[in-house]
Length: 197
Image (cartoon, rainbow, N blue to C red):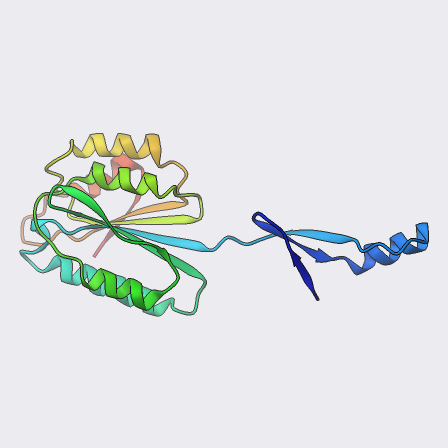
């Protein structure tokens, strides 16, 4: 069936039944249209802690592998990917939303590590990307926030500015014999799901 695109998040499809009905009633041949909502694609946004604490036990390499494997498994689904990294006490945009999974994986692979973790800066950058209910946020961190405000302050900022997100998961990649549980605390403060890797 032929469709007529329109501006916005929907499109019009010719409604044959309504067109025939209109002709039988009025005697005029006028094409009627049926409006259908356009399905928005789901976006996966990764906030990656690539600070100095991620280098010691090769967590950053593990994170890159997990993300690459996840994207490869969902390659045939209609998904967009974006990424923000935390390093050197700041946040940087690794990749804006894209459907090019190969280029996205390459961008993640080139991510460098070092410095301190400024979670609030990362959340502020995510806010600039104007996330919606069609965005799922995955925060990869050990929860060791050491610049830009406390873990609690980051949680408050999240609740005030990023309520529109469809879902948020804190992915705990803390390693070592002694675990401080800060990622779990972050998930609790944000009201997010916790996933331990």
